Amino acid sequence: MMNEPEKIISDLFKYPAPIVFIIGRYATGKTDFALRIAETLLQSQIVDKVGTNIKVEHNPNFDYITNIPSLKKWLASDRLRKLFILDEAGIHVDTRNPMGRINREIRHLGFLLRKFRGKLIFVSQRAKDIEGTFRDTDIWLATFHKFSKKRAVLFSNISDVPLVIENIPRTNVKFDTYDIAEFGTESTDFEPETQEQAMLKEWLEHGNYRKVARQFGIAHTTQAKRIILEQIKNLLLTKA
Image (tube, rainbow, N blue to C red; front, side):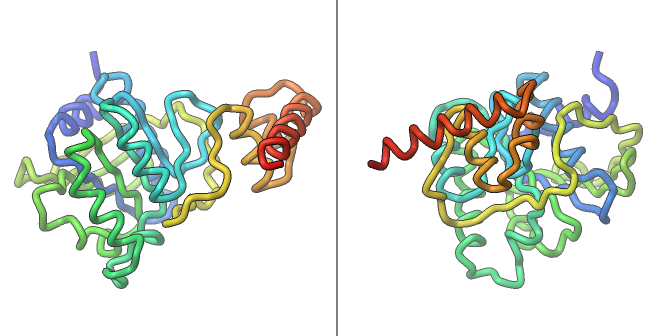
């Protein structure tokens, strides 16, 4: 039997409106809660795939997506039910720049999400930075206001009464709490399709074999280095 937070989440996300916000002050567990929601929806079979710009340790249920072209491709790739989590949304989608390219692209995607059978969670410290784009439309579903790591208040378009949620469990998904979740309008030249390619991309960004080995569950740093060097060789041969 589901505990109360999981039941509330599962019941809420069965509604068709696709846009959800998670807001709250620093260190209230917003990112952790977003990943917990994803876990719950996967376990409840309400969604089939999750994408996010959060760097989680290698997990086959989570696709790492950091730009609009990749997000569009991912949404349109099949007919599976998808959830995308955009962390640091207040940085990337800012109502003070309503005609900015990324704002226009995200707004357009927001209205197409139903066609793609998708849901979109925005994670941000302040509601006013992002909510104005969607709050007054019928695609807004709910806002979770996190007051602490264990407590949130839910406002939704299916009830006039706010709902207090307590004893929220932590996510089981491991992620880098201090990483800045990137997101942009341009695709990178190199988009990984396999774990080995994802390891190469991580190394190209940070240049740390030990960190790559730890993130992808590789037992020895030398093994991770060997895989990365092999991928570099393959990449050079492909471009030759």
